[in-house]
Image (cartoon, rainbow, N blue to C red):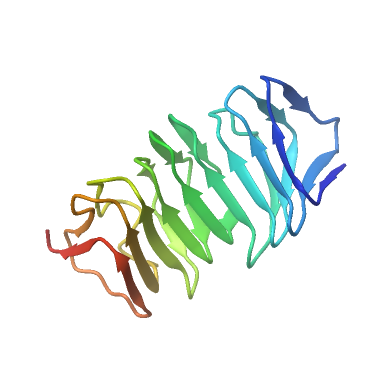
Length: 193
């Protein structure tokens, strides 16, 4: 097994292949960034406090155990990516392109949409105190409610932090219930656009 306690980036087009039964474990305070031209074959675990960033479209076939309260997985490639069917503590989709979930997935903490990426299919199920966050500093960005906000098992909390110029906006086109907090840090929250 490879244990990461510090940030590390796989670069220069290298491939990282683990032997049968081996895995990478990203521990509290550690992070692993998989670069654009890299592939990792094998299982990756992310403990609470660890961060895994996929800047490529070659997401490994096995995303293993994920911490239950504070681990973070980020899909941030410039292009399409596949989101694995897992229960995430925190999940971010960013970069650009469509991020497609092969089947239902759960986010217990914060599900963040960033960049110009969109969720292509299969709405998330939010945990009891789950948060949907729209976070972006791009000028004039608009997010129109889609599959990221499911009809049932939606987020308890919503955060809007769109700090770019030219009126960045989240547009809500159907009735929604927010049982927790609506936090408007920056940008516009347009109800029934």
